[in-house]
Amino acid sequence: MLPVSESAFEAEFFGGPVWRFDFHPACDPAEVATAARSAGTRLVTCRIPADDSSAAAGLQAAGFRLIERLVTFRRDIAPTPDVMRAIVPAGARDRDACVAIALAALWQDRYHADPQIDHRIADAIKAAWVSNNLAGRADLSLVARSPGGEVVGFNLLLKTGREAVIDLIAVAPAAQHQGYGRALVAAGLRAYAGQADTMRVGTQGSNGASLALYRSAGFILVQEQLTYHLVPEC
Image (cartoon, rainbow, N blue to C red; front, side, top):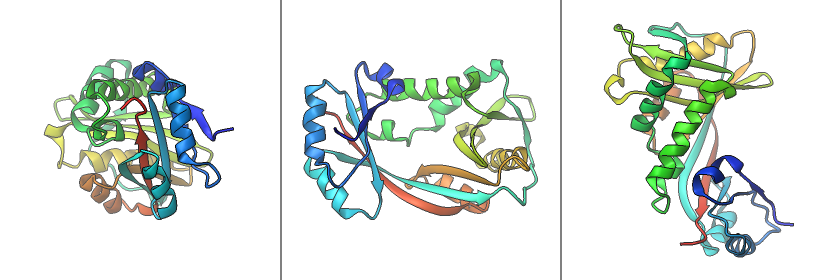
């Protein structure tokens, strides 16, 4: 049996099956590629440790393409930093503003980075991701407001056991480099004080601004992975 699972969420946007391939040395990636084509699969994704050259070679030989280097950071919740901007819980009426910010600011994700994926699909996935979190998927949804009350950023967080996770965070392009990103991270840390021990976040290795933000906020690099895509019909 192939080590793949179906992703119902992404399948809605691709109009057909989307598989997640859990790489295993005993499984030939070429077999997964062949099975995906036979099943009419629209996309196969696979993530491996960044230092696994053997897995990388096998995936590339089977037609998988390297899309991103995903880096994961973690820090202890305590001590919690001060919050220097107006950060409040998100409300239902903040949805459209948050979706607009995501579409304007979050363009380095793996779907937008893959030239074989229509940007309209990537945009729809991002919009639904934000909407679903604000509708209750997130454990906590925070927004940053400008002095005039405008939503200029958001931080959507999950919680797994004693660890909080920044699931999606963004600041509107016009409001960047003004301390909102750091304030959103700080507010998340303070919100989970006493409820979680650590906070984790992932971002693309090419996203210099995010890397600088997390490092300046005390996060430590704990993992690097490579994301591969196969679009069987291409």
